[in-house]
Image: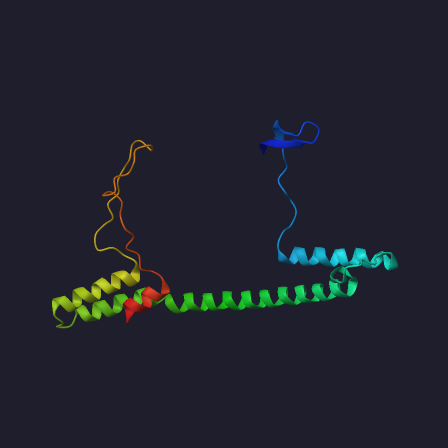
Length: 173
């Protein structure tokens, strides 16, 4: 990756631009787990100094650092557990909603086979389309030859999708 880099020069008190420097992308790991592991390494270095490591500030003494590390590790574990439970709940919700579109089609076909008045059937079909995320009419596609041409407000369309779980429940009810 080639970037322009600005370097501050304290001698002449100006920024100078270094052009066309090649910079390497970072290959280091990031994230909370890596931060906790690095913090543990820091505590290990401080411990290896022995009695030479004796800061005057209480919050950076070894007992405080060890307490902070324990809290960080416990928080990381709690976060991982909560995330796993969240993913499980999301997957279960997806599985529960998966047959909804087919069930809606079956209900509409059964209603269509009855002597229900056409207005009720049409209303049910409207709700079924909302549940399934379909449009009554096809969306009009506008082809723009020049990408710089501004789009007319009348050409813009409004999304008809009501596929959120809340809206699907509401339309099904």
